[in-house]
Length: 322
Ligand code: ATP
Ligand code: SF4
Ligand code: MG
Image (cartoon, rainbow, N blue to C red; front, side, top):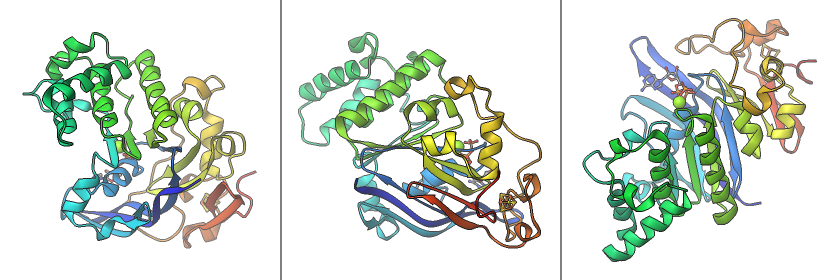
């Protein structure tokens, strides 16, 4: 399988009152074409920061980014804003938790989808026909009527369908979906995920799926990166992470998932609290909560432990938690 997106030692620090907040630390992973890659972790662990840094959507002049982001082998940091803009939407699509933020309240949803299509020199009528087809593809109820509706006239699930239709109209190679279903009820959530899966199957679109929900991960993802306090602590196939977790944090998470939760559970939190990210000291960031903590964990950054070709974790324990 071919590599589409590659993060190489990505660091993102936000400038804050106290100095700098290390939101993402030394994150490396790659996503292959057609792969559904999930990023899971507690609130504040840096998931959205990663997504936003890929498309240069971080609040400007407020952060420091180090490391590389390669897309189809090209370093996105070397792109001008204009070059990056030409990729946004077209090569890399994005859907967010709250579609209202991305939709313009004063135009009908159909017009907004058609606008993107017309950029490719497509006539108005033809663009409109495509919009209706796309709305049918994303199972929009009453497609014609909804295309003529304004964003505020639609439900959350319908708005998310608009976003997906908009994204589909450009057939991107990568879809970044940041908690796309968190605001939706369970039935709609399942439908939206099915659409995302179909997208992958039909267009070979790779998906970066950011979520709190392990049930979703188990259902749709091929690979999973588990994040904690700005770092990827473990990465593997769904099978690796659910059936053979190695990192003490992943192990605790898996234990805290009730049996049923593998299909419907939300991420549980565990005892203790996340370290202050403004105190960016060396050592393992999980040290104050880890049942296996050793002296070295408090002073030295962790090492990458390779389990198999598809599976690694970052820890001072060679074999991970028992
Ligand atoms: P959630 O699951 O709640 O969406 P997340 O994993 O997406 O969380 P981020 O939004 O990436 O987490 O935030 C990572 C850290 O960076 C948090 O500590 C957050 O408070 C901080 N942060 C995010 N945006 C900014 C910003 N613009 N300025 C300063 N700090 C920020
Ligand atoms: Fe626990 Fe140490 Fe591993 Fe961190 S490095 S997870 S503190 S054993
Ligand atoms: Mg987020």
